[in-house]
Image (cartoon, rainbow, N blue to C red):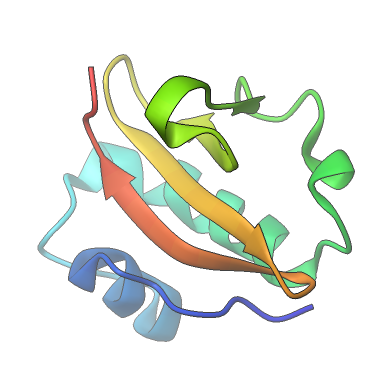
Amino acid sequence: MPIGRIRHKGLRELFDTGRTGRIAAPLQGKALLILDLLDNMESPADCRGVCKFHALAGDRAGSFAFAVSKNWRLTFVWRQGMADDVDFEDYH
């Protein structure tokens, strides 16, 4: 299922062109692999075991996250059969 909305401008640029100046170069390869997974998955269950994938809790319940680096996460919501509101954030 294709990705819905990508909120982070750098992630959108990375997804569309394969490069961006808005995300540190050492993080781009891993972020691109995760975006590829999101673009091809059929459910969040497809993500188990990948890049410390986990469901978020509390006020972020219903969202999921992948670890891209120590603090940076690629987050998304599963909505209508696709990854939506994909973001790149440091929420710690």
